[in-house]
Length: 580
Image (cartoon, rainbow, N blue to C red):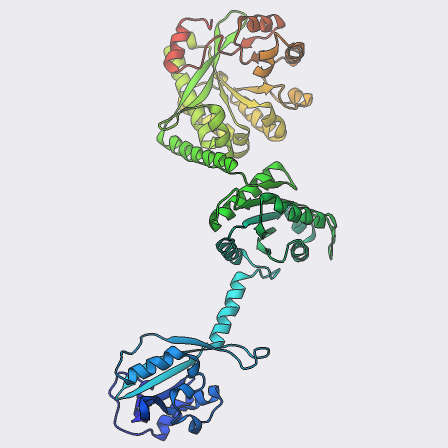
């Protein structure tokens, strides 16, 4: 019967077991199995007794089969380490339910200094008053899983915890922090790419290993260092009383980075940018603390190399608001929520409107009228300035072509359209202008493209190439906000610029400030010498208008003449024939 139960366990435990003893063939099969088999029956006094055992289990238990046969279950090695297993075997022999799944337990070594834990699991099957126990030695499996987990949680290059393990460490620290504070410090090496590009990736890896050793010497025993990827390292700081406790560690990091790294590729100097978030200024959630530390690191990067930034909730609120506005602006472009306004440019000699500047306007359903100085920088930062700029150019040309075609008084009016420096870099401005002119029917001679001084000077060669092609289309070129940046006079002399626009900051103060008056006069003198037209922005008083006209400025723009108008308002103003 015992042999039949073992044979049934090897095949299908639920199949009817033949009423036959254990044959030699059955024994050979049982002994060859990689898992242990034990058969239990109820002994005298109701205690389960081992009646059969295979060689595999005797090898694990370091006992002979004869020494195990007839032994009460509490005395069976290895199994007696799992009390719940013993109870289940006794319960099954008494007619109780058979547990589903496997029961797992750990066996401690007799000598814990040299031995290792062993891991076993067992499944039970019942037939005709016997319980068959199949036992697996899971030690190799657990060891492999542990090794795999360590591999998954460790950085291959430095051996430090990786991003996944660091997140788990932060989670644990937050759970166990009690009344102490926790901080996450993120560190980026400034211009690390330069090391890889100049000395090679092998030396770059050598540098990262050396850096990991140095950073390890900066933290306390309770802190943890990790490499999140590339040149980004992270420190978990625990047991803090306030945010100022992070200063000592930051100071140690900065001191340790002063000394150059002696690498096979030569001497390397390094500095780091650091962002910090603590449970004081951030939250006690791992994801939020990591996010806020990354935000602080980004803020530190934006401030320049070697910066240190502590997370401030108000800064993040502003960033979230900017992101929300970016999302709304993207939707507004798709939904056609933007419109154009036209601000007249007026001849200071006779007061006639000689041109208009097209200005983008955004009336958001939930925000109301959003000022351009709020959404234009976001559009530039996000890249939305390219579709926004193309839309404004096409719409302005289309509306102006219609106004010129419908209104005799508008025949000589030119249109000014602003082009962002970001758009100059990322878009094919000439193609966009050519398409807008062709589809609208507006002649190129009626279009003036305005770029800021900084955009032109920042990319002089690209500007020169683009300007030459725009001039071939008949367009005029204007330098906007002249005087607010740094311009080389050689650019003014060599670039095909037709118009200089005097920034409103000089116009605002020219009646009270001798310096502003002198700057305006210098700009006007320069424009005359270079045969350029000048336009003064931001004229709001009659005195400013008269002073500019006397100084020789040809064209003015500002609230004195008109606020930005929609197309119908512009038509009405043009029919009046004068700007003011």
